[in-house]
Amino acid sequence: MRSGMLVLCCLSALAIASPGDIISQIPAPGGNPDGLTWVDGYLWITSDTDHMFYKIDPATGAVVDQMTPPGPGVGSLTGLAWDGTHLVATVQPWMIYFMDMTTGLAVDSIPAPSSSNNEGLTWDGTNLWSTNPGNNAVYKLDPATGTVLDYFQPYSPAGCTGLAYDGFNLYVSMQNTPLMYVHLPMVPQPVSYYLLPCETPQDLAWDGTYVWLTEYEETGAQVYQLDPGTQHLAPATWAMVKSVFTE
Image (spheres, rainbow, N blue to C red):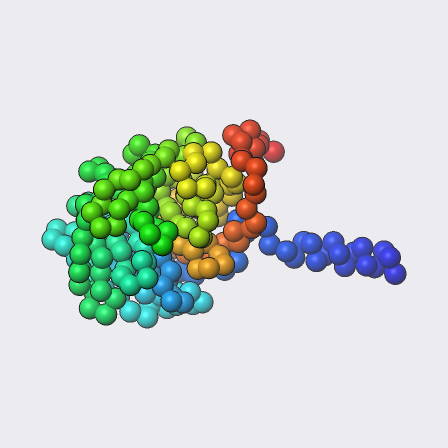
């Protein structure tokens, strides 16, 4: 009886997801998916191929709605966030637009923090946060003016790209690196980290339970639902991160 219980316990342990494990995945519409956010049970995602905003079913990836971007001469559509009222989008040339969810029209805009590159975007309930992979910075922004209130630079050899907030932690993905770090806001050293299922991670979203990730590929791109695990109180160290690649 004891040996049977031991086997059952081992099998149960193996069935439990580990931090960073894929819970599900769906195809991304449009090609080169970039910005990502969660709004009332749906994912909103942008495409840098056809320059569209898509509302998709998180269970199937089916497109439920779509919108064209605001602003003249639109280039890349990078970060996406939801402030409880508006879809907030970072659009090249570098502006952040607050969009009406019914009409798709911009009701307000602020300058993005960098004149060269802006990627991930998230909302913490009061302020916006944005990333710049060029100088590996995470900016805290005044949503009324775009003024940089503060910033930090994650301890990473790669530039930060995607961004999500779970009410306590900031999740930050790294450009062309299969790693995601979890930071307390304004703390450069991560409290934990995860291996990601793709080599080209882009933006992140938080649905209240799980982290979602876009894969930046022209064809066959996926959107991954990931187990965030339980955050650690002790900071991660570079020795811990490097050990992932040497084991």
